[in-house]
Amino acid sequence: MSIPRTAPRTPQRPSRRFRMVRVILALILREMSTTYGRSPGGYVWAILQPVGIILILAIGFSLLLRAPSLGTSFLLFYASALLPLRMFQDMSVNVGAAVSFNRALMEYPRVTVMDAVLARATLVILTQVVVAAVIFTGIYLIEDIPETVDLLPIVTAFALAAFLGFGFGMFNCYATVSFPVWKTLWNVLTRPLILISGVFFLYEDLPRTIQDLLWFNPLLHISGIARQGFYSIYQPGYISITLIVGVALAPMFFGTLLLFRFGRSMLYK
Image 1 (cartoon, rainbow, N blue to C red):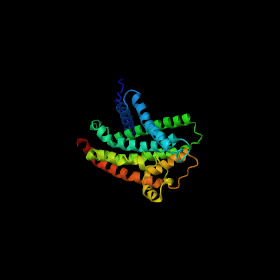
Image 2 (spheres, one colour):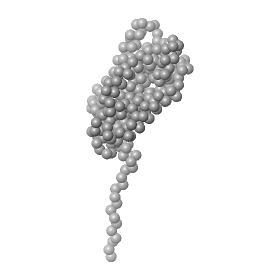
Image 3 (tube, helix red, strand yellow):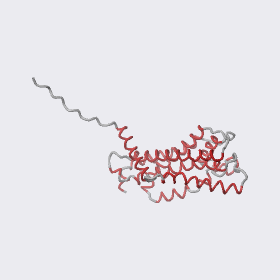
Image 4 (cartoon, one colour):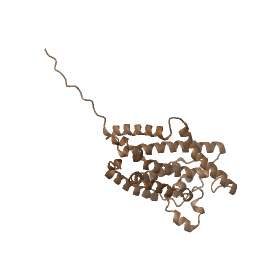
C-alpha cells in the first residue's frame, strides 16, 4: 500500500506591508549608526547642541532684560520655541536628503523612496522627542519652575512642527537631487527663521504692522501653541492650525507627486 505524497508547502511570502516595516526598521538602524555613530557621543552631541544655543540666549538676554516676556525662566522661555523650530528644521533637512543619502540602497527593488523618507522622518521624531524631554526635564529640575505643564498643546506643537517639516522635506527630497543648488538655497532661506519664529519674542509684543506680516509664518503659530502648554496664563488669540496644515500640505503634495513620477529616474542623476 503506497502512501500518497503530499506536495511540499511553499513558504508564504510576507505581506507587502510587513516587508515595508522591516525595510524601514533596517533603514532606521542604519541611519542611527551613520548619523550618530556607534558610540553614545553622537547622541550626547544631539542634546548638547540645542542646550548650548539655549544657554547663550538665556545668558545674553538676562544681561539685557530683568525677566522674559513670560514667567521668570529665560531657559524655559527660549527652549519652548526653539525646540519645536529644531524639529521642523531637522525634519525638512533630513527627509530632504533621504534619496541622496540612500541612493545606493535604492538600487534594490525592495527599497523604495518612501521607505527611505519614512525611516528618516521616524528617526528625527524619536531623536527630537528624546532631546526635548531631556532638556525640559533638566530645566524644571534645575530652576524649580512652579508652572503647571499642559501636555496637549506641547505635543500638538511638536506634531505640527514635524508635519510641517515633513511637508517641506518631501519637496526638498526631489529638489535637492534634481537641482543640487537647492540644498544651499534652502539653508540660506531657513537661516533667518530663528529671528522671525517667536523664539525671542511674543507675537503680542510686536507692532501691528509687523504682526500682519509675520502672521503668515506658520512657525510663529507653532511657538505660540507650545508656550500655551508651558504657561497657563498665556492664551494666544492669533493661532491658526489651518494655516500650518495648509502650508505643510502644499509642498507635501507636489513633492510626493514628483517623487512618484521621477523617483527611480532620480537615482541615476
